[in-house]
Length: 129
Image 1 (cartoon, rainbow, N blue to C red):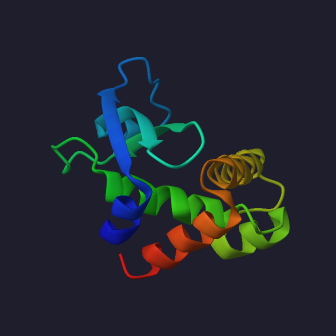
Image 2 (cartoon, rainbow, N blue to C red):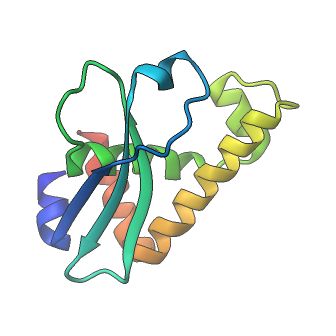
C-alpha cells in the first residue's frame, strides 16, 4: 500500500466530524471523521466519511482509509443480490440496499479519481495490506 500511496502522490486530511448522528451503539462510541484525499497526479479529490472504533485513538491514516475504500468499492461491482449473499443480508432489507448503493458510489468515485487501471492497482495493493 505504501508504494501505491507514493506512486500516486497521495495525501490525507482528516478532521473530526462533530455533526455525525449515531444510529446504533457502535457509532455512539466510535470516532467520526471527514476525509479528503488528494493526489499530485489524479483528478480532483476524494471526500468521504470514516469511522473508527473506540480502541483507535489516533487520526485515521491514509493506508487504512484506502483499504476501507477499496473494500467498499469492490462490493460495488456486485449485483444487489450477490452483495446480500456475500454479506449475509436480507435481500429485502432497505438498509442493505442503501449500503450496496453506497458501495457503488465509492466505486464510481474511485474510478473517477484513479481511472480503471489505477483502481485495479489499488485493489492489488489492498490484497496484501
